[in-house]
Length: 88
Image 1 (spheres, rainbow, N blue to C red):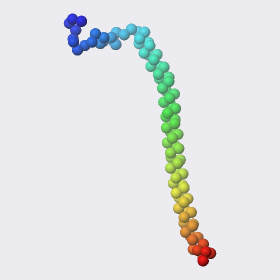
Image 2 (image 1 turned 30 degrees about the vertical axis):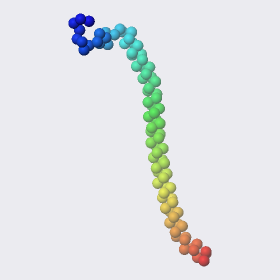
Image 3 (image 1 turned 180 degrees about the vertical axis):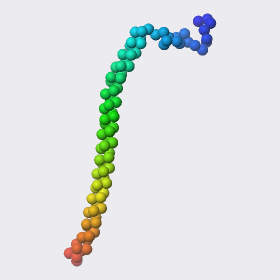
Image 4 (image 1 turned 90 degrees about the vertical axis):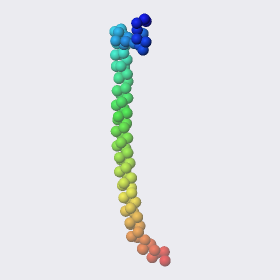
């Protein structure tokens, strides 16, 4: 330890000297994680796209219903004088 920089720990620099089995293990772990995360990522992306499409359908339906209500109100206003004459 004598002669070492006091700011450095004795374990620093081991990453460069790690054994090949550790590299193999890290590679295998990375591959396993990717094999789990890739389908999950695809599933979440698919759900996101479907949700956006569903939101658009709901917005379109809402616009359609509002137009339908406006049209029905106009018809009812047009018929209001006729109904009033029957009620008198």
